[in-house]
Amino acid sequence: MRNYDYIIVGSGLAGLYAAYQASKHGNVALLTKSDIRESNSYFAQGGIAAVTGENDAPRFHFEDTITAGRGLCDYPAVNVLVTEGPSRIHEIIEEGMHFDTENGSLALGLEGGHHQKRILHAGGDATGRMITNFVIDKVEHCPTITVFDNHAVTDLLVDWEGCYGVRCWNFSENREEVFTGENVFLTAGGTSAIYKRTTNPHTTIGDGLALAYAAGCEIEDMEFIQFHPTAMYTPTGEAYLVSEAVRGEGAYLLSLEGERFMVGKHELAELAPRDIVAQCIFRQMQEHGDEYVYLSLKHLDPAMIQHRFPNIFEKCRELGFDMTDKIPVAPAAHYTVGGVKTDLHGRTNIPHLYVCGELASSGIMGANRLASNSLIECLVFGKRAVTDSIHNRRKTAIPETAERFTLDPAKREAYLQLKNEIADLMTRHAGIIRTEEGLRTGLKQLEELARKEDFNGDEYYALASRNLLTVARLIMTPALLRQESRGGHFRSDYPAQDDTFLFHIIQQRGKATHTIPVITTLNA
Image 1 (spheres, rainbow, N blue to C red):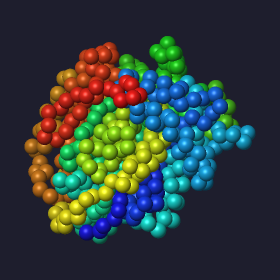
Image 2: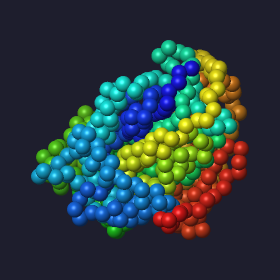
Image 3: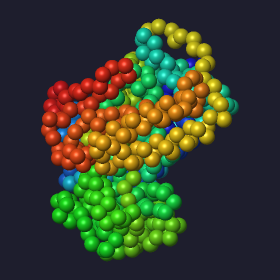
């Protein structure tokens, strides 16, 4: 057993920033199942949304977030984000973070759903990498933080007083290890790589969600999966993200016949919220039997394009596309809108267990995340959670914990086969457009997969297989219950938004699925 003041699981921006903040108050173990630079945050292109412009105000950012969330945002959480976000930005600038500037001022971009230019970028389209590397540098030079790469968490340790640590499998030494601490932070990212076509790293398959569910956490709003409208289409099936900011600079979406099809579909055309754009592209592809549409930049300044989007430009060149002309794109699973239910301080219903970042359902995102709100959420709620944890200490000694898990390499192939089967199943039955028949078929097929193989016991790949099945059920179950279309959940059999469904759907292990009201007052 290794004991620390803080155990932080996950190395995206939420985990890194929480580790950096926590290091000022105690010793920190930062666990990541792959490499510290393998995360959604690291590959984020779009930017980070916060009010810094003279003509902008937190209330405008609040309104845009609420509008994008389609009636399911909790007002107090959104208010915290938009009012504290600017302070977090100023803090990291003072600590040395460099954002792009223009004529001596911060360069602000526009993205889908925003009515003001408020998106900060770093390195053009490399914001995620720049800000993540900035915090990684802080973490790696901090003597009170120890980073453990290749450590996959298999279990949250919970007793009557709350969470006191984790079990994990150390792939470098091929053995189980137990880490204990006063407080545990779960910042393990989303679930989008459970789909066949995704912009996420292949590791983003909902491990943290399955861990939290198994431990007894409340899981909220999992029917809402955001599909990024413009992921580069390649014949191999690999999806490479083409930032929202490309459309923010004026790119058009064209049919293969060269016609703009977003005009008349929404007042903002190509800059409509992501769910609208993704659904319109999907329908365009379905109606014409096409596998992609075009994102056209032909009418824009080629020099500006290359300067503003150097990484996307280079990736296009590698794949044989000319970004200054047009790029083939199609939607791909991108962001998990729901997750583990938390309060305004990142607390879950399990004492001493905090959840931050994409894994959290803090009430901000509603039914559809507003572009570039994810990175600022990591900073705002990462700091809030650490501040809350300072005086949140156990009253009794941490119990001794014996090792439990093994790993059988022979089971890896069956796990990978199951992963591919579930990816196909999720894409077919719980993708951009859903139906009752499809969801029921998908849930039935999940049960058949569970019965087909022996996924029992305390073996690593058996657990990983159970986790995949759990995550898939957690998405499909509320998607079946929500008989309407709203945000990142579209039912073709219930295509209209229905305000009798203005509630959050909560799932919890061993308890009946239930609903709770949306908080639409700031004083709640």
